[in-house]
Image (cartoon, rainbow, N blue to C red; front, side):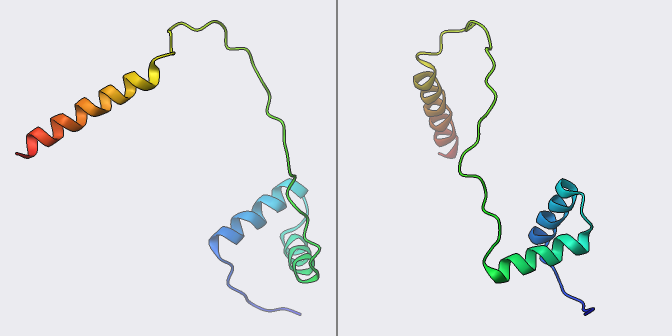
Length: 86
């Protein structure tokens, strides 16, 4: 059957990604996606994944107080903005 449908932009991105990853034609990927979705057999995303880890070397700066320092800078910037509003 031949028909015209409007595909939402986010769905198009997913379909094009599936086409690229599988190497299958767009028509086949679309039909498989609809078929699997309607049957309830759509493949599930993997539950876990592993990220590669790389050693970045020794720290060049002591970051133990980085959060407190960032909060202090933020407080100063906010105080400056509030003073300018007066």
